[in-house]
Image 1 (tube, rainbow, N blue to C red):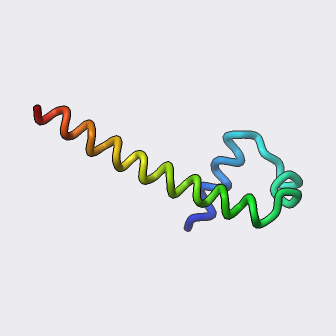
Image 2 (cartoon, one colour; image 1 turned 135 degrees about the horizontal axis):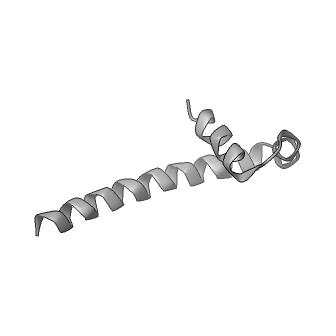
Image 3 (cartoon, helix red, strand yellow; image 1 turned 45 degrees about the horizontal axis):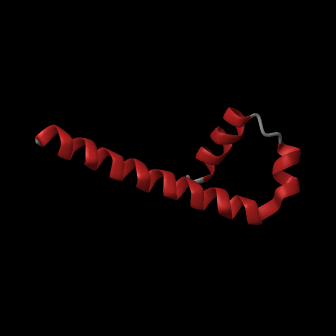
Length: 55
């Protein structure tokens, strides 16, 4: 499942399959870490918005 956001990001950024093959698995791992970090940041952002709405 985690591979689909990566493919979607590649389409958004216009990254070709040759570039993906060139960078290899090390950058794939870094991209996955970045996606996980983005998800965590979005969760934190949502909780911040909820807290702001309460007060």
